Picture: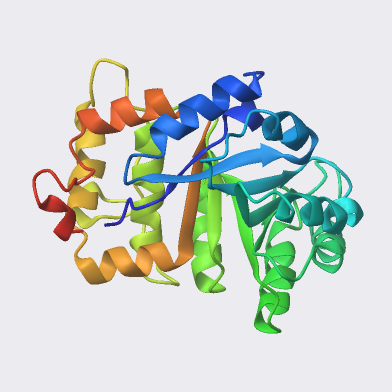
Length: 271
């Protein structure tokens, strides 16, 4: 399934939700096939830890909101907590920094024993930053890229061209953004054809309103439904995660589109 373990819960990052409340919501969300990682800023791990229970075994995406040179020590502490599994690290480049230089510093300072996704911004130097990350990955560093889902039209083709895995962050619970990224990732590397809905080009970015999908979103739904198993597998080899601040609202809106297959109807056997 193209949606398997794709959606990350970013409530601890994007809002002031108390850790206990966020953890209860994530436990409920984790029962769903699309549930991915729980994202936790370094600064909130201690708070989160106080609300863990013995039965927890949570896949944790560690978000670096502290100095990158402090990350190895922080990760040692996270690894020492048996109720969580640190499965990725997410490091954002400074907003006003030269992207290429900042990427080189981030690559040099991040730990080499965990997948690290470097948050590149839509600023001058971004392509050079992607080149540096790709060069380090080619040397064996477990690196990928992160960017806002709203910038997917710029970043997804660039990541595909460089064979870079990526994750996205979304500021709102919009399934249309996710479907847009999925379809962009399904395009062949190097494909720069202009968007034509009937040809499956770059999809529109309109969010899905709470009362149901508009006709424009129907194009996205049809495009994702049209992905065969091979295409879905190719997409997921590069598209690692999609983080949203409200997984309950996002799941409800995605359910309205009837795209996520479940074991109840046997449709989980198709893409």
